[in-house]
Image 1 (cartoon, rainbow, N blue to C red):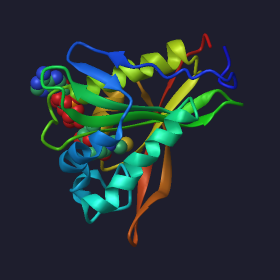
Image 2: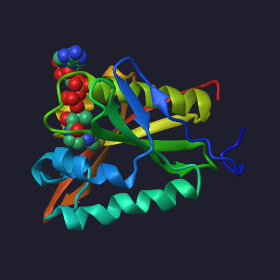
Image 3: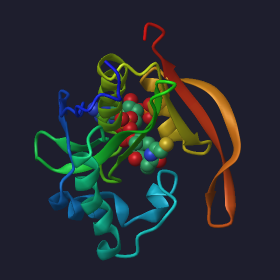
Image 4: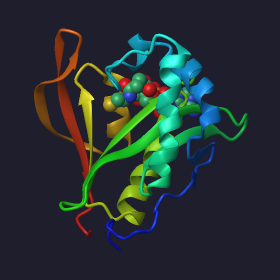
Length: 186
Ligand SMILES: CC(C)(COP(=O)(O)OP(=O)(O)OC[C@H]1O[C@@H](n2cnc3c(N)ncnc32)[C@H](O)[C@@H]1OP(=O)(O)O)[C@@H](O)C(=O)NCCC(=O)NCCS
């Protein structure tokens, strides 16, 4: 199966404690309250702050179009127990010619250190390698982002290289570590 085929390969996924599903407009408020009202927290994930909910909301509303175009691999992380959306994980920057993509993930600041990120990222990595047949998935992680590096290592990624001054916030440049996982059979 190739990713050029005009069928949408997105699937909702499930783990022991989580549902990973498409993000809808109604999720915007919870995502803002759990994540995007705290730039200091998410700055290594996305460089642009949102000063108000109104500034943030259009971004979530765009997802609808992206999903409708097919093959947009962005999951909301939902707790089975409460049905609350607490984070996101996505496979992005797909390179169909070379059969690889990047992974990004974020968990609300009140929900860290419970293993949710690890559980969600592990599931999406397996989906990416086993179902979407990517040969390689990479994560670019700011060198200071220790919790993200731990997640990458926990899910079986290995440190491949360092990109110097590749991430800029305001006037400051940060190095990024590239973690990868490769499926030699694909
Ligand atoms: C990076 C990020 C996703 C990590 O999330 P997290 O919640 O710390 O990750 P997890 O809970 O899955 O795992 C972290 C720890 O919880 C531990 N843990 C696992 N299950 C647990 C449980 N049931 N109860 C308590 N702790 C648990 C894990 O063992 C791990 O411990 P360690 O730090 O000693 O290795 C989160 O910090 C984040 O969203 N940061 C901001 C966005 C960001 O930087 N994203 C990455 C960009 S590259």
